[in-house]
Structure formats: C-alpha cells, structure tokens
Length: 123
Image 1 (tube, rainbow, N blue to C red):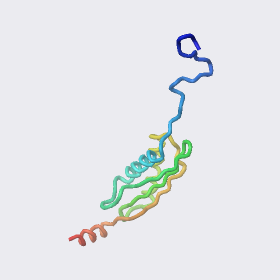
Image 2: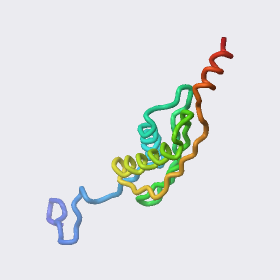
Image 3: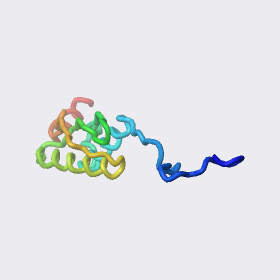
Image 4: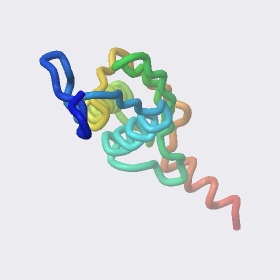
C-alpha cells in the first residue's frame, strides 16, 4: 500500500471490472423462456393462455419446462420442436446459459369448432 493512496496493484490482482459474480434469478430466465415460446408459436391461440415456463438454474445451465396451448389442428411435434429450439437460442443469447433440457407440455388444444360452439352458448 502506498502512503495516502490506493493500494498498489500487484501481478496477481484482478481489475475491479473483472471481480464479482452475476446471478440471474430463475424467474427472469422463466420470463425469457415464456417469451421465446410465444415467439416460436407466432402468438397465442384465440381464447388461449400464453405459454408459461418454470426454470431451475444450476450454475450456468437452465432446465426449462414450458406449458402451452395450441391451435387445432396443427403439427404438434413441429410446434414443440420450434419452441424447444427458440427457448434454447434466446436463453443462451440473453442470459448466457446453456439449456440442456426443455420439456414442453401441451395443456390444451383450441379448435375453430370449439370456439364457435363456445360463442354460441354465450348468447
């Protein structure tokens, strides 16, 4: 330490900008995953709920579970694959985390027939 000034930097010291840790809460990663699922699907089915995600973060990896509703008929496998791919891509880009697992749970299918039947009962 120098007299009256800051401590001298030795060979082994680390610059202030390089010290510390960044922690991203599970709920923040879940919000990213939910939005990514919505982007992959191109929106929410009429009368449906937006995708919801739950996330478990361990070190720099996030395990994601996405619950969603789809229009019927559709390519369910194709849509789920697109959701998985988009979630992995967005979580990596925005949070810097690997996503080794994305479980997609299709909660409900919305058909044009069921929407028109529901509208008919409201009258």
